[in-house]
Amino acid sequence: MSGAELGGKASSSQLSLAAAEKAAAAGAKLASFLPDAAAAAAAAAGAAKAKAQAKSFAVRKWLAVNPRGEVRQLELAKMRVTAGLGVQLRDLRLLDPQLATSYPSAILARERAIVVNLEFIKCIIGMDNVYITNLEDQNTLLFVEELQRRLRAAHTAAEAAASGPSGLFLSQSTVNLASAAAGGPANLGGDGGMPLSSISAAHEELPFELRALEIGLDTVSQYLERLTGDLEAAAHPALDALTGKINTSNLERVRRIKNRMVRLTTRVETLREVLEKFLDDDSDMKDLNLTAKEEERVELFNRHMRSGAATPFDVPLPYTGASGPDVRAEGALGEPEAMTPMTPKSASSASSDSTDLEDDPDVAVVEMLMEPYFMQIDNTYNKLQTLCEYIDDTEDYINIELDSHRNALIRLDLVLTSFSASVALVTAITGLFAMNVMLNPGQEGQAPYSWFLAVSISTGIGAIAVFAGVMAYCRWKRLI
Image 1 (cartoon, rainbow, N blue to C red):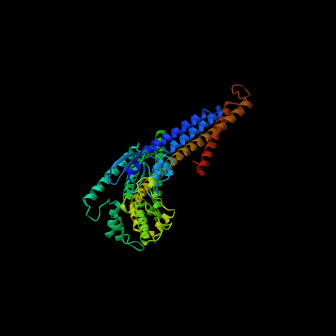
Image 2 (cartoon, one colour):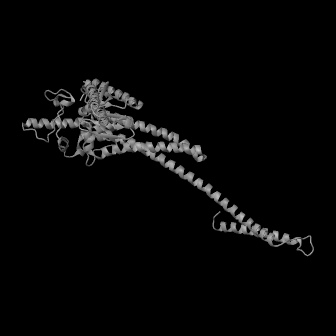
């Protein structure tokens, strides 16, 4: 549906807030007729009810970008967004900027929209508008500028070449596809593949939702790659400095870099897993092509209407709020409440018409769009893994060097301990003779002074012999 349909009648949200305030006032008025305890309970219940109503009708600022690159700022309530775009309340919680750290990156395909939560890009992509939130982030504003620039360039090119075969946006994956069709290395027309001519024909004009999704993937991929380059530029000098000199400041510097690397690796790996999940599931890729789903839905509905038979329950009804004359029901007002709801089996019925999703051109378009960005994210992930291995190797080298120093200290301690034990032998003999033998060489009848010299020299030689024996044993056992 268009942005005017979502942005019209802003007074409905004001009336909802007024209703919440009225409920709170009614609760306070009721509490005045009750006893103290009951009055407090009634007032608390009224306040909780008013808070719940205000929360359900709380407005949030959105930025709507149409296919021409025009931007409008809207203030929409949650219930109005869920009714108008067919998303769920938990999807809006996923896009809440205040809970940015609570939810990982995700791309969710809904019936009428694509919910995108990629780093700082938090938006809902419809078939004719992109609704962007998280407008306080500077990176989001840069994404809006890039989105405007590319959409305006595509619209200008479409107007300039309206009579040509290709009037819409051609992505980078189209260039890769063209080289493959020309006989390049990316030739997909091998065994079991679909003809390149049919893929090229389906890829000539990308729907608006896929163009917006590609711009978001391109912006996030370049952002993560830039962060990885900055991290590598800071990591290598820090690791070299730590290798040259191990001190507290260098260790703290490397620790901060490793923390940054772990957080960035988690973010890149999450986005890589999201893209890999889509590339592994053809039905998920088909769900991203909202325009193709709507065309199949309308074609199936018109086929049953032309047959003159009653519409069965498993035939999807077209959305009256979608753009285009073929899907407008008579008397549709373009409001979220006027949209014809889908039957429960519509999605499965629309996808069951395709005998083999692998040969579906709509799936091939999405696959060729997402595969280059998966390769780019995978390359960024490999860079981070290489940096992680380099940090681990540096840590191993530092541990080996520290172990070497520790072993040197242990060898020194062994030498000093052996020397202390040898000296202790001399001290023990000296103490023994001092307590039991009295030498007075100057008196007649006493032992001569030569005995003292003999005992001292012999004990010294014995201590040296013990120390040499201990050292020889340690050498023989390769302890030193």
